[in-house]
Amino acid sequence: MTSFAILRHLGFAALLMLLSAATVRTMISVRVMDTPEARKMHDRPTPKGGGVGIVITFLAGIAVLYRYAEFARLADPYFRGVIEASVAIAVVAFLDDLFDWPFTVKLGAQIFAALVAVASGLYVTDFRIPYLGPLPFAWPGIAATVVWMLFTTNAMNFIDGLNGLASGVSLIACLFIVFIAEQHGGWFAYASAGLLAAGLAGFLPFNFPKARIFMGDVGSQFCGFMLAVLAVVASRFDGVELSFLLMPMLLSGVLFDVGFTLVRRTLAGESVTRPHRGHLYQVAQRSGVPAVSVALIHWGFALFGGACCLLFIALPSSLKPPVPFLTLVPQCVWVWYVARRAHAAGLERWG
Image 1: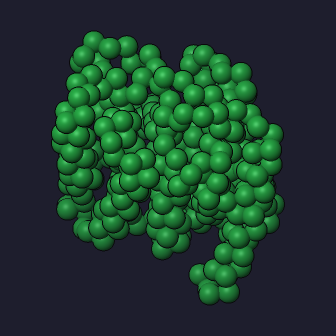
Image 2: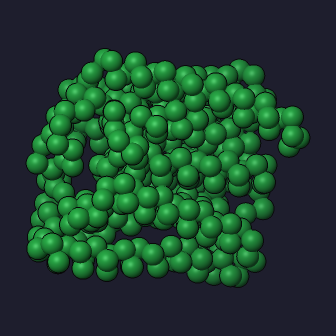
């Protein structure tokens, strides 16, 4: 890509950042409030719905992309699938912010959005088992894609409990995808990740380090879903084997926290659907680690995951499979550290 094209794209991204910031500022004035509860980490009513800025920015950008950016076009069915699914998840999540719908309603909307994306053809088609080769049937890729979309959407929703944590991790993941996609000709992923990054960059100053507004479900679910979609798009990068593993490495901190918490609560006989404050990031903050530090640690996990992605791409095929497991190393250290802090603070029950 030429220097002029990059500058033009950066200028467009800057305009979208301003659009996002203006929308977030408007949502602060609207004052859809998030009131404190026992399971939440804030102690005073705070506006929510800042994710509307992220959504509007992304949809405005994707409309321009669809109309004018031939270089970054997907085939029409895929493109329409992305737009329709993203609108569906955003609308239901925003209504949930307003009316606090039951989890079953949110899950139903997520399943619908995932099926819309998959029905358009957006699913992992090159589904390979390391050292064994590709599976001969399409359905494992379809099933894995739906499960991945649901888990990632909810994981980002669950992790959005401290200022800047979910939005910062999402921004870092998007920037790595922009860089990697540009190197490998994945122009739709390049453009889409850039649009999401612009929306997040416009929102983040209003949320970190001190929150004037929260993303709300409309932001966290939308970001989780779109990152899941970007993972599927990235799975088709030319010349990068097993590229569907890139996004899981970038989101390793988020996915590990949620997976670890679900397993721990299940083994303890606790209901996994009951609201709680037992995520690793919540236990760390409750045991005395400053909230800003917890968010920055998760940003570090995303940066480490990005470094693992670059290593993964650079290595020959035979050496790629062990690389994703490197992301577990800082997670194990984090579990050990949080457990020690919790014990010292007398938090024997993490929930």
